[in-house]
Length: 261
Image (cartoon, rainbow, N blue to C red; front, side, top):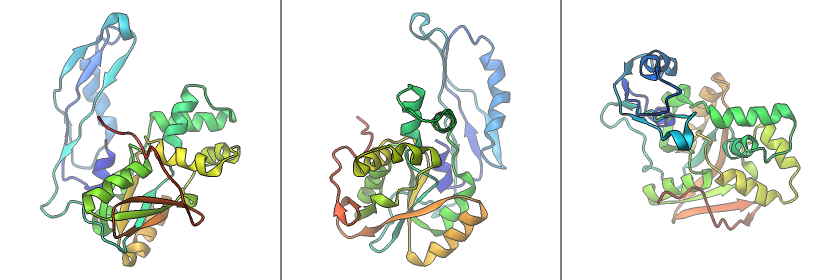
């Protein structure tokens, strides 16, 4: 995902696009190179490379096309913010809002009952997430560890914790919600269960990261300049794993997010 480039802005990029197409898209190999220019990965982005093209079984998904885009770039030695590097005392932040990916999938499947405008906003976020590339430089300059939120916020914080050899404490009541997610949440009887679902659903493609307390002001100034919501959701602790709390009470999480087999 392009969100990985948000943590480490590359000096250049190549885009090899593997395709799986049906006969409905006979001109896709001609159309794709010009269409890929809309990605605008960076000022120094390269044109698409030739990738693998396959056909789709007509009987299974005859009207579908599948695109797998891989962005490849490079960064100066020692200038990469990875998953390791967080230390006890660091603060935990997340950009944007959380839960819209999970809600958007449910909305696309017509499993939610909200106002049409709310449903449309959720589906749009699920289908066309916007990576926070504009915040990449701030992450590079101030974050101690970072990753994109794709498997679910709690699960991804667990990835950071394991890579850094530390623990995380997360305040569930501080979860940043969009207006559409808030409208859904307001109709829930069990606040803890609802927030847990939003924090484990995944497909948010925001940035979860840690930073020393002294960097918070600079991070907030840059977020404000970009009109980007930035929320402090917890703190790095000694130990291991992610401790989730709601109003001072521990919250057991049986499934922290998507598990890759």
